[in-house]
Length: 258
Image (cartoon, rainbow, N blue to C red; front, top):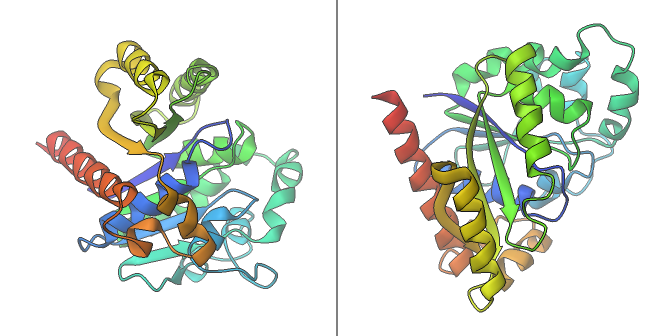
């Protein structure tokens, strides 16, 4: 059941890294071996798992360019069964370095190929763009998870992302599929959130997860402590939502396996 899942949205601030970390943590708490690859030059997933000094770490950049073998570039976190391949500062220049390289869109896929046997799930936290880094993640992935914020412009840009996924499937990775869309930052007090959720479900049908990730103060606080909210405050609404999402994804994978 091993899967590589790219967590993608070209818009920033939609809960992409938060979703990556908390879904990964939720799955690790039930004994799944999980690797998070921080592929965003901002390095928020790295910080969110407690690594603040990015000057001397080996991680996704070194693996991408083939400088270091993938099995030498990830680390145990303080959370059992959860491992991190961090983003170093050098990742910010990677897209420029790759421009002239042959087969540049397949570098990540080629260099992490042997990791799949060691983990139940590998999550790639992508940058908020559809550039070369995200393209590498899509070529390496089996599935795409799209966090979508419950706001007025939620559907704007989604068609472009879905077109990109279709083009990657057609030309570079025929096995790639849309795993699903998870609605984030849902405000139960706002009729707009409900309207947006209904609109997205109307357009994408069963590709939208039933679980809604609510706006929650504890979710916003957790990264400043270097912890996913599932560890920071297990009982809060945000944590419970991510645990529910993890169960929904496992159920989905079980259906595919039968």
